[in-house]
Image (cartoon, rainbow, N blue to C red; front, side, top):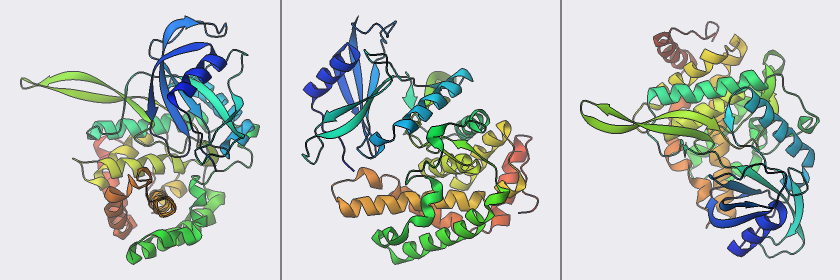
Length: 375
């Protein structure tokens, strides 16, 4: 897999050539596999397909060489974005290029220096707001993150597209069963053992229970970097502070037709890692409450929620360790591990009936219930 190499001059030329816009400022955004660059442009355009130039700018997205070949899947992403947007959920839209197309494949230089690589290029409107990353996770903010996941599940549960048929990426939660020898890249032997236990339980209780679980299309990557929040100043006892609320969602690159329970499990896993003021188990309860507010899960799905959350944590940490072993200079891939391992170790040890009883207590505070009866 190759990633594109773009200089500032390359970005200016690419945006001008493909989209008829003049870049005045650019900022590289964090990305795991691809290249994302926010560009601010002046108010002029020679693209007749752009009715109004965005003052907030755009995000130039260049996929890696592997994902660049999945053109039909890109069509599925764009269709899902349109469906989500029509439902009133704030998200970023693809912008047509000068030919009226929402993507093009370009011959560009790769970071390894390889010439002639083909990369799929798109431009998205930038959605103003802040990322959830780095914010203080209050119980309300956790609830709203879960609520966003539930809203997405409601909108996408019946969404189908040819580009999703037989489509899967390595970040699909189901792929946790194929971690294999990547687990050996984990330095701590006890953590290796823990991940193997998680994988085995996932195989037995989730994959082995496939016929009883709801299926639908899931965003599958609701993390702190893909959730948009907006802040407002509030005054409490004479002291002013910022209060944030969930505003929208980004990046449908991991979209997949899978078990619906993956959506709440994935967002819960990331919320648990990033919390600084709430107990991680409570974070999960508040996040689940937000989801249940929008969509009630059947008992079979509730029963495997713990396994799915642990599987996402194990998957993230294993991939991170593996990528770091391949490239020790890549520290971005380890960003969740330091805070995340203690969360996984603790969560895995808690008996399911105790865990669900705690979550049920939190749900009760919202006048909500979940189908934990048989768990």
